Length: 412
Ligand SMILES: Nc1nc2c(c(=O)[nH]1)N[C@H]1C(S)=C(S)[C@@H](COP(=O)(O)O)O[C@H]1N2
Ligand SMILES: [Mo]
Image (cartoon, rainbow, N blue to C red; front, top):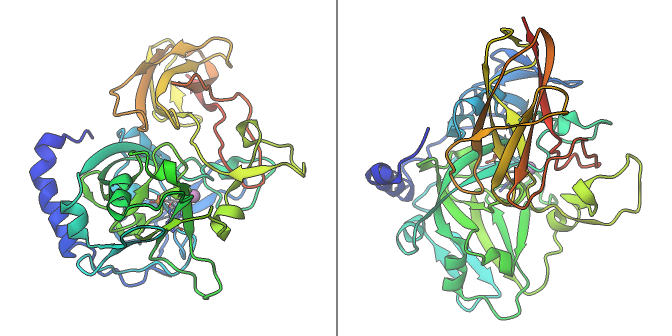
């Protein structure tokens, strides 16, 4: 799927007016307990048996990890279908159990307050009409994507590789909104939170912050549309933060509150959760202690073969097109290489259309299978020259996996 901004424009205006009028949020009731199994899948790690579900609003077939709060994984085959991940199969991750099932777009307000000259309370219509509209293709990847492959195993959502997706985001620059409010000189951070809450009042609200300079970099966005449509409720209707090149924990959904802080943010979700070892590849030895930590931040490069599955039979001696996706992390993809001989030699892959440095990029290469099992590996090098590592990282959070991936096919 390739979105054409010029031809989409009229339709998109209508869609966006619809968001502001509140007509598109609908009422979804409660989906807890609604997750009937529709077949199963076995993800390739211990305890990887999962149900498929179609029981969630605005979602097609998803892999069910948890019902409340929802954790839904994108079936991996979806990534072979196009460079953008369809909204109805985009993964879903929430921390707190009270996620609104209904939001009135007409009543919704995005509040900006704290260390500002002028507090704001913006309606969706104001966001749509009072600020320049911007668009950006960017990968949304959970910090714990692929956590299920960690060895030794670590606690947390046992995702395979489907806690990521690529979308074309439409919205406004966070900078433009902050500048309308006027940040007080010397402010430290900007904190974001959404409409979801815990079941008991003692649960800390899910809040994430960015340094003021990052928040004002002109790239961080407040998005109100995803792939030309309003955000699905579970992906943050009506507005969410987009932090290009950073892990999705910062991409606060159902964003309703922006607070400028005079001091660095010391809330739970910044100082206790989502910390990584301050080491190369955020990697330590299992059991190692006393390692300094930092909040998780920039994405690192990854690449995947999408056109072939493990154990798939491929005809011997005939050229075979191998396809996949890659992303560079906090910058673009410079090169993708594929090896069919256990990493001794690497073939350069052809890169597809460039949708911008934060997007997935498609790649393809031709190989000629020999008889028997054949391990195909793929590695991306980003524009900063960072290459995927040959050995997997390990940390107790199960964060930032980006080892070179492989698929084993069988020449017959
Ligand atoms: N309001 C809110 N925003 C949130 C979260 C959350 O729990 N609440 N989780 C974050 C995390 S950790 C991830 S991985 C992404 C998931 O985005 P998605 O569900 O649209 O794929 O949302 C982020 N934004
Ligand atoms: Mo996440």
